[in-house]
Amino acid sequence: MNSTSDIQIVLVEDDSVIRDSFQFLLNEEDGYAVTGAFANAEDAIKSVVALDPDVVLLDIQLPGISGLQALPKIKSLVPDAAIIILSVNEHQDTVFEALSKGASGYLTKNTPPQKILEAVNEVMLGGGPMSAHIAKMVVNSFQRSNESPLTRRETEILEQIAAGKTRGKIADEFFIDLETVKSHLKNIYAKLDVHSKADAIKTARINKFI
Image (cartoon, rainbow, N blue to C red; front, side, top):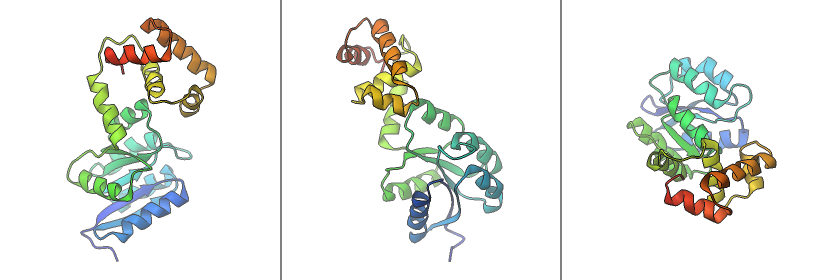
């Protein structure tokens, strides 16, 4: 039986295994209660006012309305609720769009269960929990030089290259074809006046472009 003092949580996650595991995790812990669990944003939006949650755990890649589209809608319906993104998507554009639309935190789905509980507590205290990689990305974005000749997409691709990702992997993650990645790399080399991946990474890091 849920206590009225429990942190009331709504889950929006289309993967039933992940949704059920999060629901079990949170309900098993004292002080937390999942009052609604939805496989899509549309159903969550219909029910969220009646549920009046303290925290919403929201996936981004949902069938129908995406998490990013749903975020401002949910925020307008329950403005006092803290919304934490739980997603496999770590692309800079997605992270910043989510934060700009009102997300209070951003966690990757491989976040350990204890960290998810801590994140819920943190937002209740007014904090902004983020996975370490996401937090580093946000900090780096403020430390970057404003003089970079690279576009945001070129910067993202070079960051992925610097992280050891292959061109094929980058193409898959950004939902673009391999030739587009190659074209971006060619532009990066030309703008940085280099002829190799190693030199591009080195030049970009020295100049704080990544």
